[in-house]
Structure formats: structure tokens, C-alpha cells
Image 1: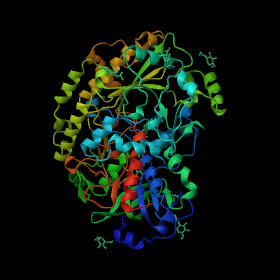
Image 2: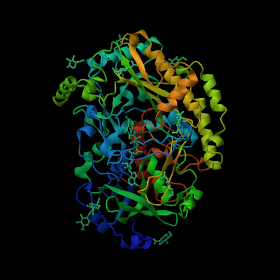
Image 3: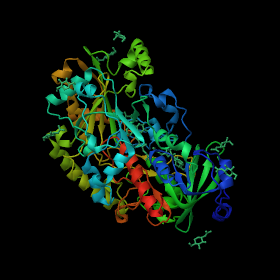
Image 4: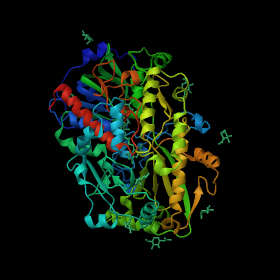
Length: 617
Ligand SMILES: Cc1cc2nc3c(=O)[nH]c(=O)nc-3n(C[C@H](O)[C@H](O)[C@H](O)COP(=O)(O)OP(=O)(O)OC[C@H]3O[C@@H](n4cnc5c(N)ncnc54)[C@H](O)[C@@H]3O)c2cc1C
Ligand SMILES: *[C@@H]1O[C@H](CO)[C@@H](O)[C@H](O)[C@H]1NC(C)=O
Ligand SMILES: *[C@@H]1O[C@H](CO)[C@@H](O)[C@H](O)[C@H]1NC(C)=O
Ligand SMILES: *[C@@H]1O[C@H](CO)[C@@H](O)[C@H](O)[C@H]1NC(C)=O
Ligand SMILES: *[C@@H]1O[C@H](CO)[C@@H](O)[C@H](O)[C@H]1NC(C)=O
Ligand SMILES: *[C@@H]1O[C@H](CO)[C@@H](O)[C@H](O)[C@H]1NC(C)=O
Ligand SMILES: *[C@@H]1O[C@H](CO)[C@@H](O)[C@H](O)[C@H]1NC(C)=O
Ligand SMILES: *[C@@H]1O[C@H](CO)[C@@H](O)[C@H](O)[C@H]1NC(C)=O
Ligand SMILES: *[C@@H]1O[C@H](CO)[C@@H](O)[C@H](O)[C@H]1NC(C)=O
Ligand SMILES: CC(=O)N[C@H]1CO[C@H](CO)[C@@H](O)[C@@H]1O
């Protein structure tokens, strides 16, 4: 049970600044309760939380505490070794969606990290920026300073890009543009030095139907075929997680940087509308405590949980808060609105004539797996350098490159009633922001990627629909932080999203039928083998798709307040002081590529904004 007697006065009287421990480290509750106060208290130690904590604590006079729901990982193979990818202990399980109305009421699991490092400890490690036009559109919607040109220094600051071996790059058609990369940042990024022969079939097959390669997704145009880049340290071929690159990296030199693991932030404590600290609860004992924040409380609990914390703190849509018996401190309708993710569709194949080895071989062939693991352990190129059973190539294309009939998809989108899509009676500010998003997305739909195709050279192609027009929501369903919120993806509530997915699926069929790939004898086994009628194919896609690729975002959007915004361009929550949000929940709409590179950059930028705000070194 949460302690009931955590009064603001007790918090403020009890809190005194004392000497902090000698090294950055995990702290326990006992030491916190004695000391009780920090300059910055960060709720959530994922990518954004640890990035900001690291940067703020560069000033030795500043104390930072990160409170993280999950534990520290133990550097298990499943976390560290790409080919052994299986980070299940650190996923948020069980975490379920609400029944999805446009998907026959199906409930889906919600993939999310719960560990120090958050998503960066459990993710598939793919590390790419998205197209400049996407960030420029955020800026146009009100996220001042988030255009690609302004973000570029932060993208560079966040990474150490490791160029591949020149000869390997040449024989594998790997290209990049050094001028857009950083070479001294915390995140180690690299290309895998191993590949399956089928990659050439994919590469040549795509080229044969006019799909062009992009030199470097990170230079502002992310459309085309490209080699997957990873947040992997090439010297060890191990994961460069935020725990590794924004905590372990600085541990010996930061007496002012603390992490309290296995503890949930239950709510933000206010004096009026000024955030003054947080209430937390030990996950095991369910006993709580409070911490004072002298300068700021920073919310970084990820896009599913950040809005939940705000709502439980009295910051959110007043009707929702009142239904839970929470007195609103700030009526902010956008908190928990605007949930977005990427749809996933897996297409499976048998082959009459596939090449060996391929993306299925690690699982099919124990001799090969043993041989590859020995090579990995010896520091040689190995299939274990690739994440689980994925391949090395992916393509991201605009709508017109997936279908000649893009005009009908666009007119379907334009014929929708945005108010109905948001449930019929939406808050007018949220509706206003949604309409602006729809316009800018539809205007750019033939320029920015709407989806991806990635063949693993073996049994599976992964299709992603990354440009949703549907919107979901996060709503607290209890005042107890340990009770999961209601997570409604709103998947394909706008039927345009299913049409876009269909276009990508059909383009993939065309690709698999090119001579370069057809020679391998692929036979589709799911989701719609032999089905050609479009309505029937769509029914199969609906039954097979997953509404989440673990890329949740945008639930506390940086938009104007009159457009349903939650934070201003300096990450400050409207109507409050001393409270900000820094994670992927502040984005106006989802990026087309995997989000992590953009989350690191968002965190770097937020930290700079805060240093400026408080005049920190
Ligand atoms: C399985 C998986 C695969 C992915 N693959 C890729 C990929 O290949 N490429 C890519 O670019 N992106 C990938 N992603 C997405 C990427 O990791 C996320 O977008 C990113 O981690 C989001 O960063 P964040 O800081 O917003 O939140 P997170 O990194 O999710 O961090 C939020 C943290 O807050 C903690 N928290 C939640 N509630 C509380 C609370 N009440 N109190 C305290 N702490 C709390 C959580 O435990 C978590 O550690 C993947 C994600 C997952 C889960
Ligand atoms: C939570 O409580 C348990 C049981 O008392 C304790 O062992 C653990 O250290 C506490 N967690 C933290 C982070 O202090
Ligand atoms: C929808 O769900 C119901 C109940 O689970 C099931 O009987 C029905 O077959 C499903 N329909 C489709 C089209 O999947
Ligand atoms: C690289 O490109 C060349 C020329 O287009 C092609 O012949 C070759 O098969 C490609 N190889 C790979 C691994 O993509
Ligand atoms: C998309 O199609 C246009 C023609 O409409 C073409 O010029 C462009 O190269 C294609 N993009 C890619 C990445 O193949
Ligand atoms: C709350 O804020 C007011 C106004 O800023 C201040 O006068 C008061 O001392 C604060 N209360 C506490 C308990 O700090
Ligand atoms: C299994 O892997 C071994 C070792 O690489 C290889 O020699 C063998 O041909 C593979 N077997 C099959 C069926 O592909
Ligand atoms: C939400 O809360 C209500 C009331 O406590 C409960 O009946 C319902 O089962 C909860 N919903 C979910 C999905 O947990
Ligand atoms: C695919 O291969 C499996 C295993 O050999 C077999 O059971 C299945 O019938 C095949 N499916 C098709 C559509 O060929
Ligand atoms: C986390 C922390 O800084 N703990 C300190 C609290 O204060 C005691 C006594 O002053 C120190 O011993 C702890 O290191």
C-alpha cells in the first residue's frame, strides 16, 4: 500500500541538502531518506532519462537522482549479444492494450522496457535518424527548435559513428556520409561485419523494380533501401545501451549522479502549481517515500507511463482526473492523447531453393549456430553480430513508391471526419492539433516514408506501417501507479492506415517475385498465401498485424496549448513551474525510422535547454 501520510509539509520540513555519496551509483531507499533532496529528480531511467541525468550531472555542483521502475540488468547474453537477443526479463510483462475496436476487439501485449536504460536495453538496436521533413514538420506544428537543422548538432553529439572496414563496405554496398555524423559521443554505432548471401538478392531485386538506395539515412533523406546500423560497439560487438553509455561510462567521476532502481515514481508533489518533489513507492514492499527537487522534476517514464504519472499528479484532462477522484491541478486535455506507434506485419515463407546460411539458419541448424557462436566469442565476424534472426537490409518508401494508386489512399484519408476518429466528442484543443497533424502528414505522404520492408533472407519479412493517421490514448485507470493504465492504440481506427499497409504488402509481393528473389523459390505461408482479392487480403492483414512495434510516442505532445499541447518548446509542462517532460512522449507525431536515435537527440537537446535555464556548467 502507498503510505497515505506523505504530506507536502512533512516533505519540505524533512528535506535538507547533505553531502552526496562519493560515486555515481545505485542508491537504496535508506540513504535517500536520510538525505532527501536533489536539484533534479528524474522519473524514469530510460534513454531520455539517463541522457539528461548524465548531461546535467556534468556540473559537479548539481545533484541528480533518477528513479527507475526496473532493476539493473546483469549483462546477460540476451541483453549484450545481438545474436542472442532475448531480453525478456526486462520487458514490461504483462502489459496489455485495451480491446482494439477496429481489430475485432483483440487485446495485444504492449512491448516496453522496464530496466535501468529502458528501451535501449531491450530494443533491437537499429539506430537511424528519420527524414528532415519529419522534424521540420514538428517545428511547423509548434515544436520550435526541432527542425532537422537545429537537431543535427544533437544527433552528432549523441553518437560515436564507427565507419566500417572499407573493403567490406565496398563488397557489401554499404554507404555513408561522414559529414553528418558524430565521432565522440556516448552511443557507439556501427554496421554488422557479417551478412547472409541473400542480401544481394534483396538488394538487386529491389533495384530491378526501381527502388533506389539511399547513401545515408541520417543526412536528411531517409527514403530508399539501406543497410541497418546498430547501437553496437564494434570493438566488442555488444549493445551500447543508455545504461552503458550514459551511466557506466561516467560512473567513476560523478558523485552527484544517483539512480534508485526497482522503484516507481507514484506522483509529482506540488505547492500550488509548482512541482517540488515526487512521491515514490518501492516495488517490492509497496512502501513509499518522498524526495524533494530543488530545481526541477523531470518526467522521462516513456510514452506509456509518463502521461500516467502526470494524470495521477493532477495534471491531465479534468474529466478523467475527476472520474478517478483526483483533484486537477492543471486541466491539460492533451496528457495521454495522441498515442502513436508503428504497425507490424510479418510475412512468412517456405523456400524450394534458398541459399545457406540465411536468417533462419541460427535457429534451424545447431551446427551452424555453434560454429557462429565460437567465431563470435573469438572476436571474428559472425551471425551473432546481427540482432536475433534479422537481416541487414531494409527499405523505407513514400506512399507513391508503394502504390500507383496513391491518390485514392489520399482521398480516403481526406474523407475521414477527425472528430469521429477521436471518438465523436473530443476535446476541441486536441482535435485542433490532430487536424493540423493530419494536414501536414497527408501533404508530405509522397515525400516521407510511410512504411518499411525488411527481408531476413530466411523465413520472415517484416513489414512496418510507420505513418499512422489513427490516434490512441493512455488513461490512468486507478490512482495506484502500480496498476497499469488503459493503453488504447486506436489501431487502424482510420481505415487509411490499413490501405497503406496493404500497399506495402502488395509491393513486397512484387519484390519477392523479381527474378533475383524468385530464383530462391519463396512460397508465402502467411498471412495471405494465394489470396488475391483485396478485401480478403485486408481481412487477413487485420487478423495478423500487431498494433505496436514498441515505438510508442507522442502522448505529451510539444504543441501549442490550444492544439492539445502538454509541453512548450523548452519541455516545460503548461500551467506548472519546475516540471518538464523529456522523453519520446513530447514528439508531435511518430518518426518513420526506429525512434531511439531521435530519443537520444531529444534528450541531449533537453539537457542543453535545462543547463541554459539554470545557468549550469
Ligand atoms: C522490444 C523493443 C524493441 C525496440 N527496437 C528498437 C530498435 O531496434 N530501434 C529503435 O530505434 N527503437 C527501438 N525500440 C524503441 C526505443 O527503445 C524507444 O523508443 C525508446 O527506448 C524510448 O525512450 P524513452 O526515453 O522515451 O523511454 P524508455 O526508454 O522506454 O524509458 C522509460 C523508462 O521509465 C521507466 N518507468 C516507467 N514508469 C515509471 C515510473 N512510474 N517510475 C519510474 N520509472 C518508470 C521504465 O521502466 C523505463 O525504463 C524498441 C523498443 C522495445 C521495447
Ligand atoms: C525495496 O524494499 C526491499 C525490501 O525491504 C529492499 O530490499 C530494497 O532494497 C528496497 N529497494 C530499494 C531500491 O531500496
Ligand atoms: C471476431 O471475434 C469473435 C469473438 O472472438 C470471433 O468469433 C470471430 O470469428 C472474429 N471475427 C474475425 C473476422 O476474426
Ligand atoms: C552490390 O551491388 C552490385 C552492383 O549493383 C551487385 O552486383 C551486388 O550483388 C551487390 N551486393 C550486395 C551484397 O548487395
Ligand atoms: C520513388 O519514386 C520516384 C518516382 O515517382 C523516384 O524518382 C524515386 O527514386 C523513388 N524513390 C526511391 C527511394 O526509390
Ligand atoms: C509554497 O509557495 C509559496 C509561494 O511561492 C511560498 O510562499 C510557500 O512558502 C511555499 N510553501 C511551502 C510549504 O514551501
Ligand atoms: C548446417 O551448418 C553446417 C555448418 O555450417 C553446414 O556445413 C551444413 O551444410 C548446414 N546444414 C544445412 C542443412 O544447411
Ligand atoms: C479499470 O478499472 C475498473 C474499475 O476499477 C475495472 O473494473 C476494470 O477492470 C479496469 N480495466 C482494466 C483494463 O484493468
Ligand atoms: C512449409 O513448410 C512446412 C514445413 O516443411 C510445411 O509443413 C508446410 O506445409 C509448408 N507450407 C507451404 C505453404 O508450402
Ligand atoms: C545517497 C547518499 O548520498 N547517501 C548519504 C546520506 O547521508 C549519509 C550520512 O551523511 C551518507 O553516509 C550517505 O552516503
